[in-house]
Image (tube, rainbow, N blue to C red; front, side):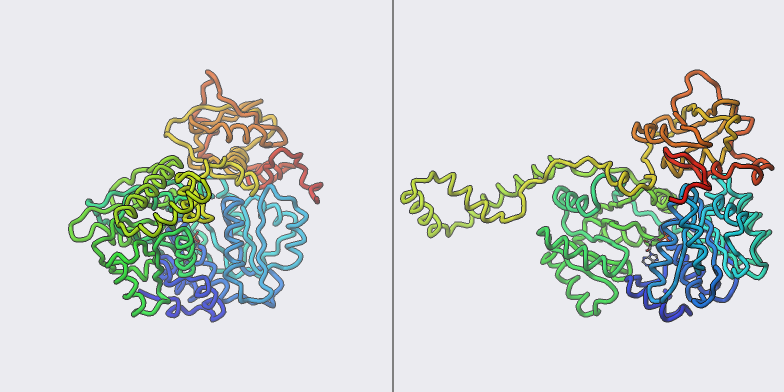
Length: 580
Ligand code: AMP
């Protein structure tokens, strides 16, 4: 297995990676970073969660010229959310590069800050295709100094109807640039981009293992509503387990999570690659002997770990590839026993779950988090049990005398004295969990479109009140539904644009919250006012997706309509006047 030291990264970049607690390069990183550093074009078949952002960001940062005034790297991303995420990752990885400047550019944001950001001469620009084209056409984005182009989630850009925009940008960049193309899948249109615009690319795909582990019961919990730490503690309180390994992504997280668990009264310890071998073995010895029950570990530290009493593996952070997953869960079910594997999956990591299922050829069933009542029932039962155990141990005569003495002199019933003593034992920590808070505020506050969980595969036809007369385009609609409404773009089906309105095929079970939110979203200057289509029939042959984008795409006053190029929620959309 390679380490970051084996890669020829700039020392300052390597230092950040180590400060971030990354122990080893993920498979996609190990395979692409050397080629990118050697100046080769690369296609990488990899999804979110595999560490692909660092796979392209670290080599770019290793060779960045901090004195240059024109953008040197351009990253194309399908959504505003991803553009921001990638820009944040660049900023993080550039922590030791003084003066480094990355600028995210996406539709829906006003032009003012983007224009002044561009004037300041960012080293790296991360943008959605529509808005990047707008800036190219305005002359505000200078690509003449570009050395690197990255297409991130290329298949998603294709799905969202951006592929012409992507090509147009690729045609506008200098011939000598290096291109890296990342895509979860490699449909024909993406291959043809690769053939036309990449020079003899190195092709990398993260292979998946096909191991099966039939004695391990696998479940996943879709992260929502409850923080992962609270979810973990509920599971620890309610599941009966012997010993558990909790996997996290970085060394720091092993320490942080261990401290938090200890503060909540669990006997946990951390192991990671920074802890000396002797100490690691001591900790594992403690686990084996039952002196601790929970080990918080990174993949590296837990490699080969063989402790029979590990009944549960909990993937607190989803692993980067299915091989790691198979490795992790193999820490339980040792010596012919059965084991339990639990996986936390946040909305953006759903595809990783699918690829793990595919690789292991087993389906992973969804689990319900133990309810507040179940947790409280357990707590009360444990509380009662500890009284029973203490009584059974005997040797209470001194305390019994004290209580009786107190009862006599203060004239207080024994039950009240017992209650006071119980409260002393419990201390500040509340004995019972509070009922669950309402989960929706977070997403409202962050202002980002939340990826909604939509159950069921059934689709239905919805009607929105914008049509050909408003010059709406399929990509504008997809952009609005995906970026503003958080409808997973994979779940947006045919689009049938009529004169005054449009029919769209969407999941039948759209949550009410989402419908309300979408209803207020504006496309082509009009509210969508989305509702179910009644008995109108959608024409699947015509102008629906997948589409050939219209030739008139770059003419006329339609900037605001391109999907990431100006779909706005509940605001008037006149780009020129958006300097707020
Ligand atoms: P990505 O696939 O780029 O979205 O990355 C997924 C997550 O993995 C991000 O939270 C990164 O910070 C983290 N990450 C990336 N590379 C590594 C690594 N080598 N070791 C540990 N974590 C990593």
